[in-house]
Image 1 (cartoon, helix red, strand yellow):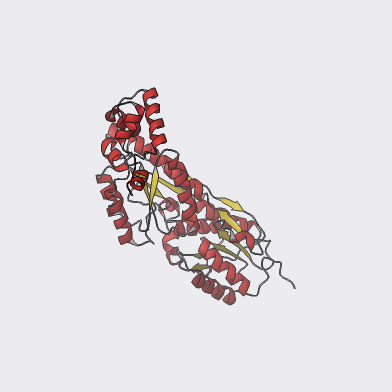
Image 2 (spheres, rainbow, N blue to C red; image 1 turned 135 degrees about the vertical axis):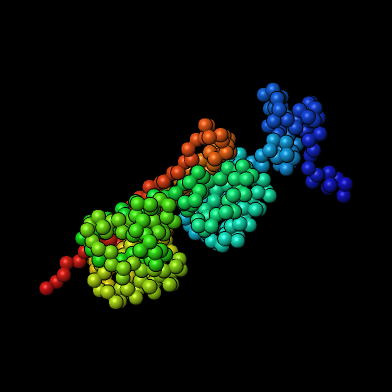
Length: 371
């Protein structure tokens, strides 16, 4: 029994120091990355630790140098492929710098988001990347500022926090490109399926302020801008509202297509809505894409498996996460932009990444009426 306990017991720092022929204090400095240790001694200590299978005590190290070598990522839906890819970009970027990631999923619940902020502060992470589900209610982010914790906003703008760094998709411009593609094919009766459908008057009156809108509203703004640039009036009946639920989106779009045969094209502003719209078109009885075209948002795997393959707006979701992580690492090293004297305060960075239109076989020229 004693032999088994000896085999499974973790080696101590004292044993590493003895193996390397240095003091325990020197071994601690070499493995903890603090204080002054010659390169040759540090290498000897690391080699001894590797031979013995020693694992440093992360909590003890964090108490010494003030860093846990961890960041937190707070997202609204980790099951969404968009956030899954963005998270992969974050992890790949921060791990090369020696950091690990604590993930919080909120399901767009404000209380869950507040709790995530409280816990990440208790865990003493070195920074945070936050995709807030409630851009209009972000008082809980004040606790991050009070703690002088660097954080970056991901994907969701927060108009009341202009001094906080952010990384987002150029949503309005990307949607405008998608609708322009349909217009170039001769389509004029273009429907849009959007979670922001009930906000059309608000969006239409604030087109110059697209950057402060949440993604769904900004994409609706892109639709309005494209239609107006083609000198087309916005028909509210073509702006179809649906929550992010495939079945409801399919029913809402099918209802429009059944009621209005003049619709020749559909633009869906989200990957879940895209699935619903695609199903509705297939169920409408119209030949797809000969009689009706469609552009979706997000380049998910299913979009190339179906027939016709779906024309999409491809978001750079991996790059979004990687850019946010890189910006956060710089703020961790240099301090947040808002935590400087006024004379030495850098401007916050607001990064907008362009999306790409991927043309496939779900779009075709508008059908010519037969007489």
